[in-house]
Image (cartoon, rainbow, N blue to C red; front, top):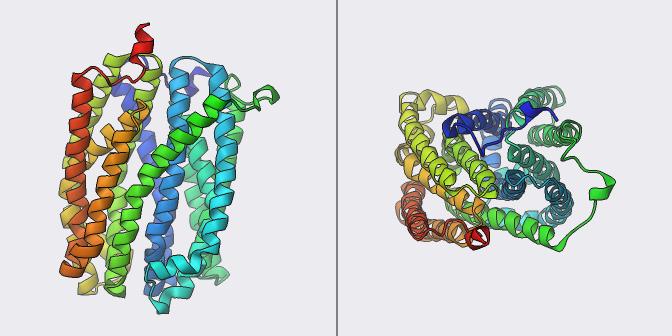
Length: 454
C-alpha cells in the first residue's frame, strides 16, 4: 500500500497532523459549498431575484437532508477511524460494506417519501405563491439527487478515516468547475431555468461519489472490498446504524430548528428572504474552517481512541480549541467587506435587503469561538462514543430556535431571527463544555476504559 495515502494520527506532532488533515478538508468543504453558492449567484444574475428567493425557501429543508447525509458520512468516518487506530482491517472492510448498503437503502426510501410530500413541505414552509413553482422544481430535482450526496459524503468519510483529506479535495475541485460549466450551459444555453442549476449540482455529486469509490477500491487494496467481505455482522450493522443515526439525528435536530426559523422568515416578505439567503451564504463560508477543525478533531480522536491513547486525545482536543480561537479572531475581517460581498451575492443595492443581511452577519460573526468550542467537543464526544450529551446539546438548540420561530420573530421580526443562533451557541457550548470537563475530571472520557485496563 502507498503509505503517503495514509495519515496515521496516532503518532507524531499533533498540531502538524491535524493541520495537514484540516487544511485540505477546509478547502474541500469550501469548494463543496461553492456548489450551492454557484446555484445562488447564477440564479440571481441570470434568472432573477425570485429564483434567489425560491432557493432560499427550500435552503433549510435541503440543509436538513444534507446535514443528515453528512452525519451518516461522519458516522462512517468514526467507525472506520476507530478500527484503523486499532489496525483491524477485517472490521474496517465489513463496516465499509455495511455503510454502503445501508446508506443506499436509506437514500432511496427517504427520497421517495420526501418527493411525495413536496407540496406539503412547501405549504409548511409558507412558500409565497409567486415563487412556488420555481421552489417546487428546484427542490424535487435536489431530492432525486439525494443518493449522490449521501454516497459522496460516505466515501469522503471513509477516506477521511484513513487520514486522507486530499483526494476528495482534488475530486471536488474538478466537480465544482464541472458544476459551474453545466450551470451556465443548462441555464444560459438550454434555458432550463432553476431546474438547470439543480440538475448541474446533482450530476456533479453523482460523478464525485463514483470517482471516490473507484479510487478507494484501487488505492487501498488492504482495505478494499472483495467477495469474501460482502456479509453482515450484527455488531457492525448496529454500530453503523446507531453511529450514523446518532450524528445524522443530532445534525437534523439542529437543522429542524433552522427550518422552523426559516418558516418565520418566509412570512416577512421576499426582500427579507433574499437578505437572509445572501447573508447565510457568507455565514456558511466563514463557518467552514470552524467545522473543518471540528471534523479533523473527530478523526484524530477516533484514531487515538482506537489506539487507546487517552492523553493524546485530550491534547488533540485542546489544540483544536486553540485553533478555533485563532480563526474566530481572523474572520472578524469579514466586517470590512460585508457590503460589497452582499451586493454581489444578491445582485441588489436595495437598502432593505443589504441592511438586513448585514444585521445577520453583525450578530453572528462575533460568536464563532463559542460555536467552535461546541463543534469540537460535540464531535469529539461522538468519536469517544458518548452519544447522549451531543444529542442533548442539539435539543437545546432546537428549543431555542422553536422559541425564535414562535416568540422572537413574531415580536421582533428579523432581529428575532438573528439573535437566536448566537444565544444557542453560547448556551450549548457551556453545557457541552461542562459535561466534557466533568467526564475528564472523573476520568470517564473513554467509555471502554474498563475493558482497556483489563
